[in-house]
Image 1 (cartoon, one colour):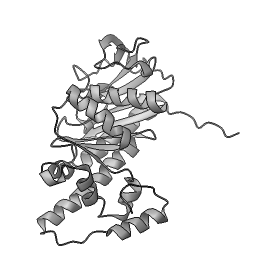
Image 2 (image 1 turned 180 degrees about the vertical axis):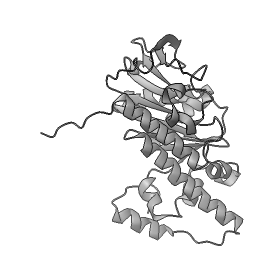
Image 3 (image 1 turned 30 degrees about the horizontal axis):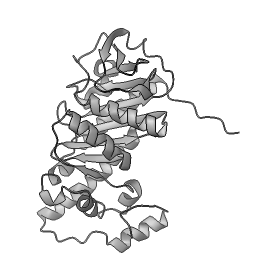
Length: 275
C-alpha cells in the first residue's frame, strides 16, 4: 500500500501564495493592488499562531461543503508582489462555521487590509462548487489581469470561447498540452457582482481558466497554486503572440490544426481543440 504524501503545512502554503503573487507580477498581470489569490485547505491546519486575531464574518455566499475547513485569502488592495515579504500582513485565514453562512476570520496584528478581496465571493463560490461536486481536498484559485488576454477580449471577434482558443492555442506546441481544456470566455460583468460570481462558477466547471472580458482571468488548480499560475502564463503567452501577429499585420502562420492534433496525439491529450 502506498503511503499518502504529506500534506503541506501552513508555512508551505503561505510561501506558495507568495511565490505565485510574485510570478503574476513578473508577467505584468497585476498592477498595483489588482489580482487576488485564495487556497482551500481540506484538512486540519493550525492558523492561530500566525493569525491570532479572530472575528466573526458573514460569508458572501453559502458554503456548506466547506464547513470546518480553512481558506487562505488575500486582503483587498494588497499588492500580490508583496505577499512573499510578509504573508501575515497580506493574507487572512477564513475558517467556515458549521452553518456554512458565517466564518471566523483570523488575521495578524500586522494586517494591512480592512477586508478580504472584493472578489472573495467568486473565490468562495468556486471552492464550494468544486468541493461539493468533486470532493477536492485542496484547491488554489488565482485572479489576475494579464494585459494581452484582457486586450484581446476588448476586440468583439475574440470575445467568444471558440474564436479565442483557436487563436491563442496555435502559437506553441506546449499550449495544447498545458491548456488542453482551453480558456472559457465570459462577457463583461461588473467586478464582484453576483452575476459574475455565478458565471465564473459555471465556467470553471468546464474550464480550468476563464477570461472575464475587459477585466482579467481566474484560474483554478487542485494540484498547487503554481499550477494555477502556470495556466495563466500559458494563456497569456498565446495572447501575446496573437497580439504581436496583429501588430505585424497577421503575417505568421502559427501551428496548423494538423500540427496541433499531432502534438496532442503524441502526448495522449484529449481535447475539444483537436480533430
